Length: 238
Image (cartoon, rainbow, N blue to C red; front, side, top):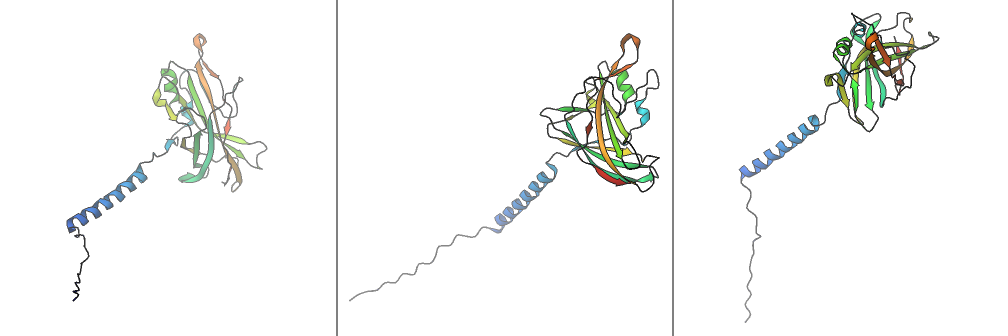
């Protein structure tokens, strides 16, 4: 006589996690997502900005003693050096308080195209820097070139002139290799330009060295750089 034995084996189930543990895991996941979002949003270093909108032509002049006027077109004779930068003209737009001739907010981008640091002169108080500095002073000129059928030759306007000296670290901004900075300045519409005329705009930058003239006094403007023009052109109708 055969005996049949049947066994019923119930599947083994893992005990469910207590609700408190599940809530803790959800909270940790939410916290991690928020943390990563903050890192992405704020972790990257914001580009540097140099605001030159308060620059005045009077800042270039010495009220006492010799007078220095930095110009874009004219530079002294010598062996021009190369500036290790690339320049782009990003934007020109009319300001809210602009009159017939401006000012127009102008945005440039300066990129260090070399493999080493470039120290950009950023001081707008040239007279004070030159008087107080025992070292040579670098003068950096930001300008705009206008090209139009109305002009037989292109015209140029100085946006700002900044200065810097090694003896005053605050007068120089370090731009690392490959790094770009934004520069904002104000542009005036040429008074002899007819209304509603489209012009082509290019940014122009240059640099020179100011030295004191020794016993004879005066200032020597020396070692001009080659002019760097923006890699692009903006068409703008004033």
